[in-house]
Length: 252
Image (cartoon, rainbow, N blue to C red; front, side):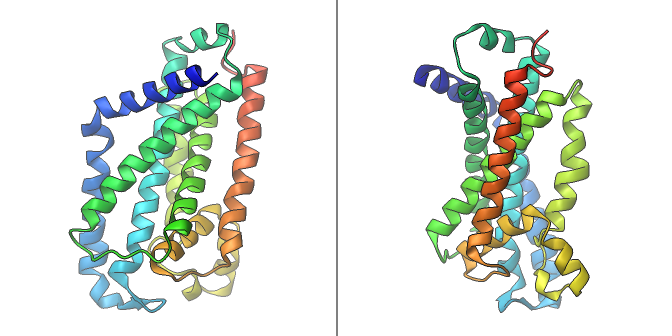
């Protein structure tokens, strides 16, 4: 089982490493634009948010948004391609348990999220003086976020029947939830209705936990920042395993 898991992970890492110009460089460029437009040009007018100057306040959100998108994109594109070119059939006839297959693809998504997240953080360090409040909270928040969206990408890939299908969820679900999850603002400034509505957005808890780990400020309790994504991971993992075990869109 370990050899099978290791093989899948190595294959996933080599896949996105070979095309680093497409997988790592674009998020770094996008991050620079976010910092220039929102942090540099608008930050001076906005001032401070939760006692932190705006440029520093949006840094955790920008990093985590990149991790979310890259973890999701790696898993959804990789697993869909294995279905599209029928290479997944080799895994189906092998004595590899479905949970090992799932763990391997998710680990690949987490690895890409980590690599791109580190590249973005390194780039940001040229614009902003970075300091970390708690490496432990930061690491746990990153891991939970990356695992959750790698699982979500895996499920999307199972249902996807064309290349267009793998872009629907990121465009119409992930991006709105990310922007409405407190990336550019604190939910404390929202009216009560919208603040209550944000409580149903799981990305808000991840964003808040990551910001707490980096800056030491947050809008919710730390246990909720961990509990909500853990519950989502358990749910998505159960759904993904069920779909694999029943052969939905994977067995003919």
